[in-house]
Length: 115
Length: 113
Image 1 (cartoon, each protein chain N blue to C red):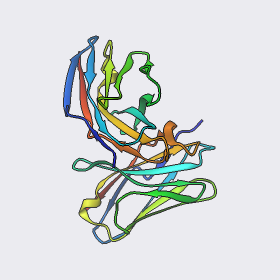
Image 2: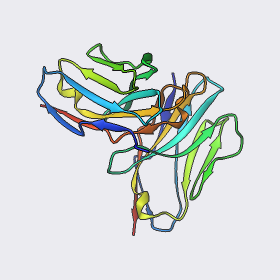
Image 3: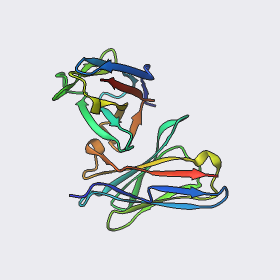
Image 4: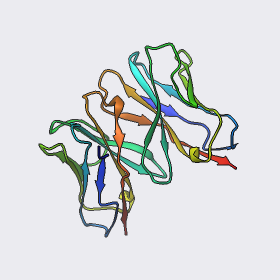
């Protein structure tokens, strides 16, 4: 079974600063995807970034980037130039590349950006 | 293009009743997945449908059921409601069999009293 662990229940960062959210996972599969989703107070889950396990290059989306360490099974999210709109719950998630029909989510990290 | 629409947004039910939640996926999407979100258990997978077929089911009791219609709209039903069923129920839709590009709705907040 797949497990995803987020060890930081809450974090805060000053506006315009950089913050890193941690995530580790456990799987015996070699073909998989990793995701970071953001859930603002509106409750809608919004995809922040996606990483294919077979790609060695770390994914980047504007101010968001990941540090994917496959051997260590680590997948951290770095948010640069934090903005007030980044305040939200952030969930790390795993999906098998063989079945592709189910997310396994971590418990989430509540991020607050302080003005 | 309209997003994933879940109805109703809020619902209050009494223990023992049953409830039906609806999810309309993005036009053209054929996969619909359901998740339950609670403070204690986090986000847990309920089931996934693709072209009217249930492809995968999570570890929930038989009181939780679902279906998908030919227009890809999906419903989930919970019978004999318990207090512990109070949760945010999220629906996600995807165009392809692989749900790596899934879009979520805003959820239905179910409160059981």
